[in-house]
Image (tube, rainbow, N blue to C red):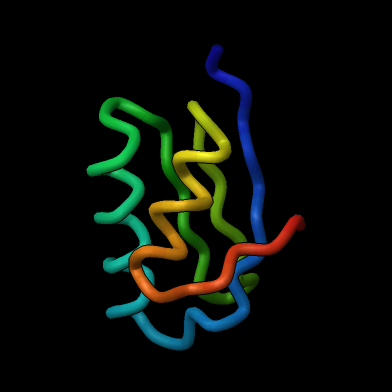
Amino acid sequence: MNEKTVLTVNDMTCNHCVGTVRKALEEALPGAEINVDLETHKVSFTGDRAKGEEAIREAGYTPEAA
């Protein structure tokens, strides 16, 4: 299932954060479509929502429903 998930990650504060979140999602969800927007603090991805949320948490950030 390639349902798109959109989350808010308010504790992303810089481009390094964006890279960390993107890398965590790429590793957890190979082949997923991923978009990370620092300005809006929105993260969207396709694939398993639970895996994506867990990857963001393990990277040290707090995903919330958008």
